[in-house]
Length: 389
Image: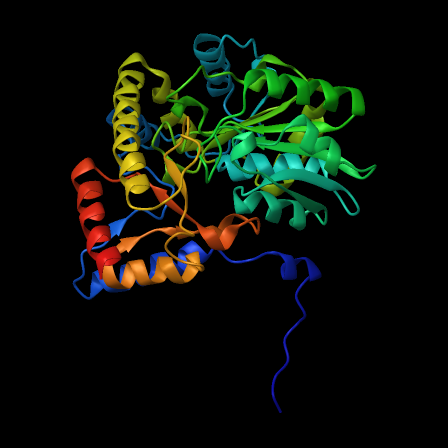
């Protein structure tokens, strides 16, 4: 008799896998077989964590800082984050409104767990970061994918929000700069959206994970308003992906419930990581991070025209992050197959658009410029041979 197993929850049917992980697994298998792979698929800087942060983490372990913190995080770290908002973005944020979380994912889970439930809808851009829609589904809410394109800079607008809003709309989620497009929303458009949300009683969530990696235009944080949920992370700008540390700035009214949720979902973020992150705000570390930011901009300025010259359509120059979301429809009608052929034949790993939604996904591919310039130049030479074959 064939053994049976328990049924999984219905929500699992709406949570899709990361296709990029299949690309990564194949790339790693090719590397193990001796192939040289240029990794442009994973959204992770190639830079190591800055040495002062590493040293602070080691010191924390040696000092015995291995016990739980409060659910909202170390008070001194919350104060340091508030100080970062004041110094960098001229935003006055009370540290009492900051929750330190296990990565930005923890912040998203807390926010949607607080706001969204069965029958509720959360509006978000398509293309967009896939976990956003999956977090909504995990909360038994509906992610409403709003198609965006070059006309709006691949960002939501007040007009598109109003066209897709219903009485069930509970929250609007904006990412600026965004993954996968690297584009940012204008301060004026964000202000219009915030005002509409305020009047309608709809929560506004702004993902600012890549805000400090803005190359063109000003860095404007939604934390200048005290009624917006703002998500950020130590992963990207601070080069701390594997440390799994993020934060949430929330309205004061939400803090008691968020604290209860944090206590029950994950108790607290990792204590040694929190101590290490204190060193992320030192002048020496910030100087190093700005040097790295300049390097990323140089990579963008190399790869963007190089891809355009090779037939990829990138109609909007991304203002930030480290991604180029390229329309490859001149070269293929199936970006997923194209990404696989590119990997197998050239050793270039890139992410197919299907990971980021359904709107024109089969005609897009994402390149992450997270490799040094010589490796990017090598990738373009390989791409030339692939396209000429």
